[in-house]
Length: 177
Image (cartoon, rainbow, N blue to C red; front, side, top):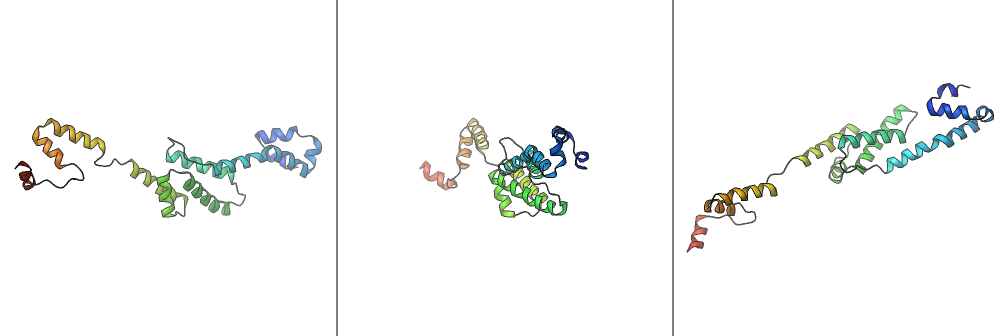
């Protein structure tokens, strides 16, 4: 029989522990090996359906995990058909498991390749990391600078408050009269 020559590691050790009757009967052999190793694919498919980006997990770490879990869950003997199918499965898992802002971008762009999907998510991640101008920290710095510079600084502060009408000299003239 050729099968023992193709086995290695834990599978070979398990084969050697089988009795001679199981080794000689193909159906009994596949049943015995399937009982021991068939659960791995089942667990891998469960992991695939539960893929989700963890708190603090970077995009590259999550993408690597998506690739590994997808390959483990959907091993295909026909490599040409498996590649296309696995690409679609990876994109689906990435879309389903990535953080919400990136998920929306993936759904909007509908990538056709794994590389395209990664580019979209990386771009979205870079956009989220760019600091916005006019944040509360910037406003606090402006307030601190203005309050230290006396009345002129306070006037400057009032002119820069959001949702206020623009201040003009005529407007101030009416206020002072």
